Amino acid sequence: MKNILITATFFFTLMLFNTPINANNIAIDPTNIFPKVKLETSMGIIIVELDRVKAPITVNNFLTYVITGEYNNTIFHRIIENFIVQGGGYDADFTPKKRNVDISNESGNGLKNVIGTLAMARGNSPHTANRQFFFNIHDNANLDSGRHWGYAVFGAIIEGEKVLEAMSQVTTDYNEKMSWEDVPLKPIMLIKATLLSAE
Image 1: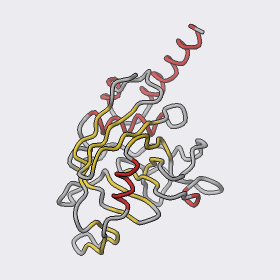
Image 2: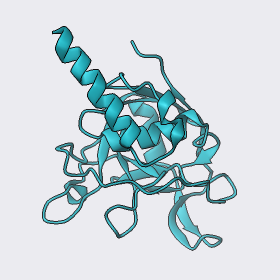
Image 3: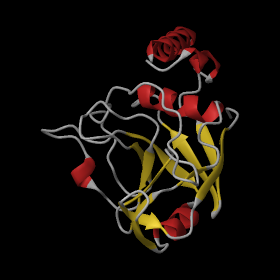
Image 4: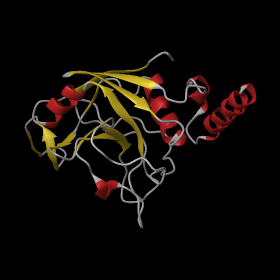
């Protein structure tokens, strides 16, 4: 049993150091296989549990933004009822936040885009996920991988489901400044993201 734990620790540490983000990775709790993050939003608190077994690159990427405070005071800029709640990329003035390098797409990891899961947003190219993420507020099988690349799920909500549900129902409209549809009329802030201590 001891040898198994040592091997697992080595594996996750190795994955951490090989993740193409930045040197701050060394501080991201590498032996915690299922880290939890508290998201303090303007509508309430959400806690997510991340899956480093199935999505080590994506989890390490997300945690890098968390521990450096890069998600603090950002907005949920795209909300589509019965689809997704997306955020992590812009401040309240819609100014893009600093980006690290794009990461590899882990959408073939077996985790599905079902209601309550957390996944990475990306561009049309498969390996362009960076800092924006979204919650699935519906079972979105069309976002899963198959013959084409999907959207990588890397965690799920474990507390605050009612908060997420309320967020998904806010009034949205076309934003002329950004030329975007589905923007909340009243900004929903991600005030602070915190990596919780391992249990």
